[in-house]
Length: 151
Image 1 (cartoon, rainbow, N blue to C red):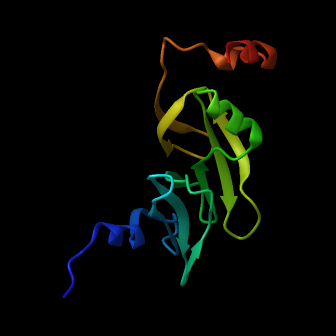
Image 2 (spheres, rainbow, N blue to C red):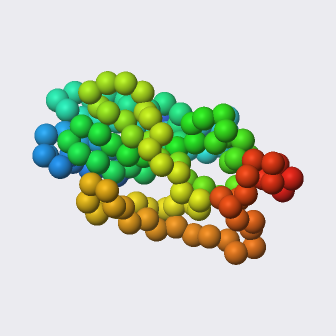
């Protein structure tokens, strides 16, 4: 038997965050893989509903919650505007909703701080755990021109 080599870890897929839909008929989960070139881990959302299918492919989707039996909510930086904000180190978290019956993920809401965890309280309320750096500007209070001056 051959010894396990460091390079062998590049081929592993790590499963985490398994959550059943409210009706218990399907489950979503995160699959993380090593990216040797970028020296990081990439994470994607998957669904099991009798078969396994990949739901996302940006490589940065880790956290999600079920909104109902057919939709999940997850945080991501997907648009060009969000990518620009992230590159400028602006604190925010954008959430997208993905209907598992078909279609692309759609913007749902954006928070003006870095969120670490979200919980659904009911159909219109969420509880979010996050942090705000008091030493950073309040970007969410600024217009586009004011933000540009800060960057």
